[in-house]
Image 1: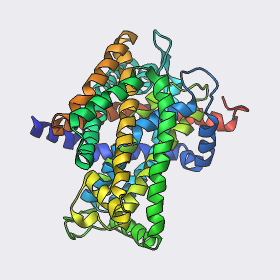
Image 2: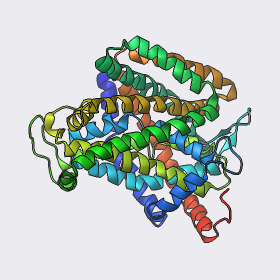
Image 3: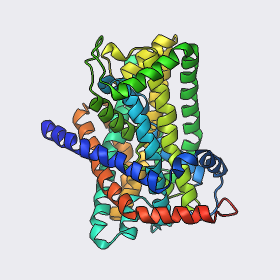
Length: 446
């Protein structure tokens, strides 16, 4: 069974999918006349002004962004970057940057369509995302894709955003502090339940407090390490750029990597980290209190910028600057080795970061699954889904999860495919909405 799933996973995340993901981002970037890249400063202003929000919706535009970021900034920012470098060499970080640069347009288009085609459920709460812009924006012949997305989304979360995350937390706490995994799982269950059972407003409130703190703290500690080794930065950047276009020779415990390996693992881990094209983040942005799809789209695209071009870059630079990447170690262990060699007690930065990032992923993704279930079964299924989400948390700390990870990772690819098809088919609408907005911008910030 594992061999079969591995084969399917290799096909699902093979060259065609990576080309489709990156190609969609490039196509949308060109179609939007590079607006997502050029409007980053304006987008930051909109995000900070979005702490209140005006218009219909459940949470503030800022809260929607923090909810999306809570799910996006996760173990991929610590372990995923390290894995990309361990398998593809330092050049993989360059291709992560490219994925993020063009992924901003993808995330922008997703959020524009999510706000444009969102609905209210029986309880009056807003629901949106790929399943809704497929059903409300495309011909009936495509509607089965929306159902497929919702099925894959509701199932994938239990693996990659729930049990895998609780497993990561329990493993690092057990290794570092000898805390029993089951105890970690039970405490996590209580903490996650306290947030998730309160719905999107509580998730947004907690995320708005926790996400800025954890992201800024992690970036600040990384910048301290970079500043202490500032003379090594030019060489590190040169190494990253050089190995993006030339094979990485075998050295130390590093087995060597081709240019294709750098591209493959850089793009794959970049998408895993920032989720551009996956279709998850627009589910959160659809709940924003706004009547301006373009403004929420601009706020949404910053999620990719912050996640990959800021947080992932910090991890990658520390690993390359400290020259631990040839060690043959991978994942969170490689990041831990880099931080511990740079600062006394540096491993605790990674431990705390990993725990916070994984926890916020669990609460953010619960909302994604929540809305997928509403699309499939209606509002009556919300409470059973949330209870199931909470009860599964400790399970991840007690079982071997390699197969679960493979299944969830494959389902993520199956989520991306319907979403990317919808983005390409609805791209003319995204372009026209964007042009209309910038030709006649609103006078207020609603």
